[in-house]
Image 1 (cartoon, rainbow, N blue to C red):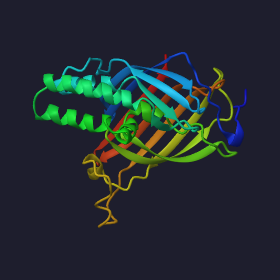
Image 2: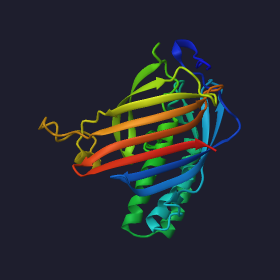
Image 3: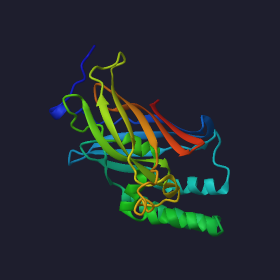
Image 4: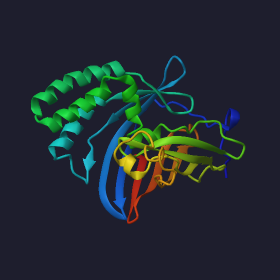
Length: 283
């Protein structure tokens, strides 16, 4: 069995790839182990090294399918068409693999302003206008656009701090938000552990296991509160309970992501448990 090769401070090495990689993304939502919805799509990723020796990822998303169908409800169609102005997006990462900046923000903003006029001409009504205005607020503001990326399962999982310095026990505790409820991320604390030996197919496994440490209760999360309002007046309030397990599989030769398999198990109420299953595989 081959040992995992680390660089300084027990860090994993990452090498850029000019050839596009295509990933299949599947997100399943289950309530009490009953499948409620499935979203799947393919995404293209290309990685280059820029002049500052940081990595630039260009990402393009193909058609999104909801329960194996293209969006057919007008609101879903509107969101799908609006997202086309978002791609391709270029992400610049830091040395740990996390998102640093949106390198082509000006281009995205310009594309959106043109697409917005088309959508306003076609979609009428208060609901459509509200959706367009909410998208507009994000795509014309670089900071909000960057924040929105981590509310998407692919960006949240793919651009994770995988290349951080690990301890001599190959572990590291990380605190991050995950989009278990879409636009209302939940904060988790997890321990990332690198398995010391490569697999038979020459992959590096990184396992992340942890729990939610968010101080909000379920009601506040569902209403998109940004702070634990109830806990400020009553310490007996039950905070959100959720567990997470993620396994990353990296190519041992270059540290590129081959697959991500994630499971988030969340207690909604006394009678309901929500599971969010995400799979990202290089095709």
